[in-house]
Length: 134
Image (cartoon, rainbow, N blue to C red; front, side, top):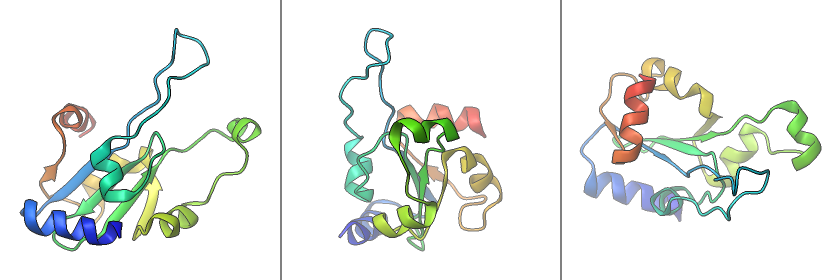
């Protein structure tokens, strides 16, 4: 279902390039170790189905190639959150063509053939982040 939505959005609303979106980040409450309830960005959920924090996506609007970006947790986090799905399992779960860590975003945009040298479509709030990154 999300694959069809991505294809339709790319075909009807974007003329070439790469679409970049993020789910958003958790916000600490009162500076403690307690977080406010998280709600993922609705555009991101609409295109990916992912409702977890720290995720992102790259979609080649010409080919429909969907790369899911996920956060890389430190090994000690496994004690608190338990086992996490592998990149391959996440790609299968969300119908992504590939899955990488969010820390690989710069390299993907600058060097990866599906995305290298293409215009990047994103939200205004993420545009500044991408300018700083690239």
